[in-house]
Image 1 (cartoon, rainbow, N blue to C red):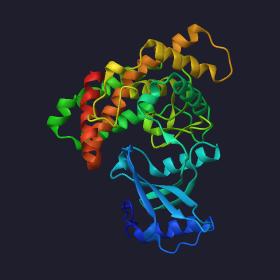
Image 2: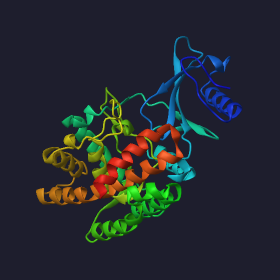
Image 3: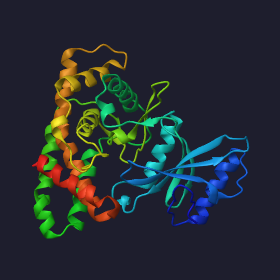
Image 4: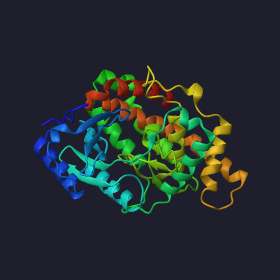
Length: 335
């Protein structure tokens, strides 16, 4: 079964998907007559998964119910444990963060549809929106999530490096310098963990496509927690600043333009808003110290997404161009 009207949903388990849809609809009091008549709208911007908006008429006149269907990308199990990601998703929902999980099937899930717009690259440069994101990020970092609260960054980098070495040819491995990056990870870990650093629950993928805003309330929602884990908060801020150099809806989505990397004024304003949102007073020295830590973790971000790009180019053909090109760009920056 491929549910069709404006688009289609690919699924390896069509009957299971149909059953889950019917369960969700029935739970809302809707009697599904013909699931083939659902409106299916593909949503752009996701790189790890395929995402669709599904609409169907309710039993109350012209009203429609909406859900979001997420089809898991091929080969993504090399990046994260899907069961862990689902547990994070459910826990986030209990904390009032993000959409609710409505149903699961073998190669995807059905989520609550958030009535908010996904931000654009230009939105990240808006001072008001940027301050709202900073405050939301502080709230996110303060979440008390289950499990160990240890830094996961270095373990993940070593795991991805090992995976990259397995799938790359000898020539490709030499081109990317994979033989020396294990030592560079150790150097970075030693240098960046010398002094006190605050650890929080980090999103780790703070590109504009994972940030939504309600136009009426101006409430910010962070979505997509595949890569979320405990890490130094400076790492998350560094990731967000690097993402401000990206435009995934341009003619060259795989190229990061570091000419538009946020300047010192933008970075300081975001960092100050982040610290102020907790309600505690902060000094200029505290802002400066966090900024200094953020700049150091920029290197780890380049390495993180460089490995992601190399592996994606082999594991997920749907993002091959984006992945490999991103890896090439990031490797230059790491070295």
